[in-house]
Image 1 (cartoon, rainbow, N blue to C red):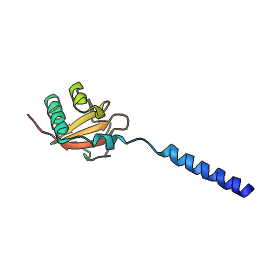
Image 2 (image 1 turned 90 degrees about the horizontal axis):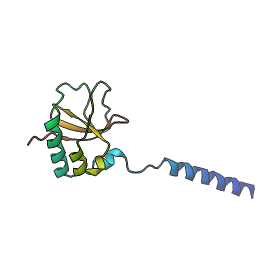
Image 3 (image 1 turned 30 degrees about the vertical axis):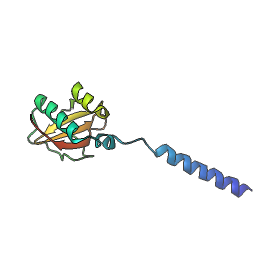
Image 4 (image 1 turned 135 degrees about the vertical axis):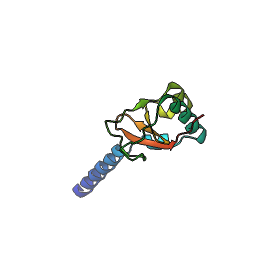
Length: 117
């Protein structure tokens, strides 16, 4: 009987620990749901406001980390209207790319080409 209770308690602890580690959809997954139209419009908005970095000093890839020396820019309000799932994200323009960045972790959530109007 004790073994059954101990086994049940152990299973409950393992299950509750696993449930606690399950997180909602990651920032990268949310940001990656952008349509081509959303990416194009956001790219046009930020390209108007920000000159691109020409020598970034870091890889512009999803889950890459933007160094502290690189200035992040807040997304324009219109960009957040185009893609509400990006509310609270920042961005950086690097050469011909736009990188959407989580400002808390400085991790790149999504990367797409920079399109001018």
